[in-house]
Image (cartoon, rainbow, N blue to C red; front, side):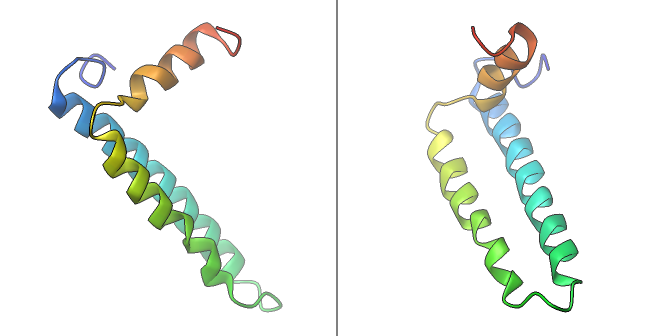
Length: 80
């Protein structure tokens, strides 16, 4: 956490990229699970959020440090 919570651009890039990898991994694993079911068709639609995540990732590189805000919510709680 100390590496990604700094105010440097490389920390912002590393932290936001880790979140992008995690979200993309979750989407791909979900897609593979639903794709294995023979009665479901067009499951490739489940991969479409990846494009949205990549766009949001590129936007956050201009100054929004996602790990800083998410860690605060996880440590302090929901209401703060």
